[in-house]
Length: 626
Image (cartoon, rainbow, N blue to C red; front, side, top):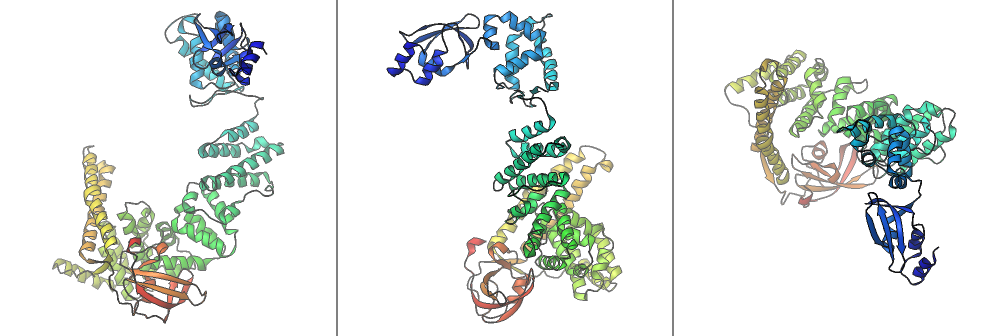
């Protein structure tokens, strides 16, 4: 090291690291400045602590040594920028004569730290339009467009699709299986990793005779899945499915200690059904099979949980597994309970009513169809598309009504017919078709329809039953009504107007759909108006606690398990199992209402009926949970 630099270190004017950089910047040496480009060191003056630089074009610049050490990067005289400064004409000639080789040299000299945009800008500075044999505006752009295609076809380069990503010179010869492994290793975002994993699966044959690389990728997939368990469980499931598919195709054993889908699902993430939904059916089935491998009630519980939230693909695979295993009883109890509480997943109901599997046929009853209509009504109010298939099954299945009414008692059939007559979810033609099927199956229902028509004709419709509801649920229903009247109906009117302006209404599907939607919205409006007119709000103040009733909190003990729990029995529109809130119309509430503390009652549950002892009854006071 130069003696002056050693002295500067001793005096504290420079750090050792700065001095080491300056020692490489002797007169005649070259360096890169991050903003100004390449410079040749013209001289150094240790007396005043300055370095003299000469940049491209002859511009000179003095710089303090300490600053120069932090802002300059020494380069060799063979670097393309150094040669450009020394002999610009020869660099231009090399670029024109062998453009691909020239770019290879540029990218290598810049250590693959040039983006596509930066490389284009650099080459444009080397070769302006007037540098070509036929100078003309746009000459460089045409040259660069042609060259970029050649670079993409050259296996030595990785040219990314985005202009803001780096052009890379490969450090090794091209190899299909190693390229795929590299792509997965370099992927950082879940979307990029997922695409790289699918590419690995698609190109699995390239790993033939490469057991070490196959084990490497299996390890990478498992590690990535493990890393994303909490942050992105859907991505973990996807990667583990790909990993397991690779194992199956290559007949390879799972590495010892690797994360398995079964272990992952032993503590299933929230809303598992939604995480599975984007996967193809085969992978959904594989994931659910891994959950079933937990064994016992844990496997059934996982399948029933996804049935409650899953889309049609998830429902089909989960029910298929339950039926294949002969686990009819858990499925039957889940359907019975959710139908009773009117909270069945519409996709599950659509599957059940369309397939009507053997062993579950007894559940196809008027009560089930009534519950299905209620579910469609609720989803329609939410403006949800989840009940579309269920609505189609109810409208189009010509044998469903006859099956449901075949052995039902008279009161249940009449309740169903009344429900069909009152609901707003069916078009008039569909409603008439459903009623005709009901009369064909049970001719005695004709009398009920005639009476209803007579009452409608004389405007003496029976008074609707008054419901008791919480103020909180009443406010929510009013907000639904306001949204319907002030947002959805006006938006529909605009849709009709736009469709009308498109001409020829006979062939205008948009106009037809908008008019049908108008009918649905207006029926919803009438129905909510009727609900609001036939309810009374309450805060459940001063309820009678000698017996179970509306507005009470009931503490219960399970006779078989010995565990204790509680239920809040509240208004007709209240219901939240996570908060132990049930409507006074729900099956669990009706089983309790009227009983006193100390009595034992039989209550419906997801596993059948349970004997529950009423420990105590107290007034409901937790209005904040509503």
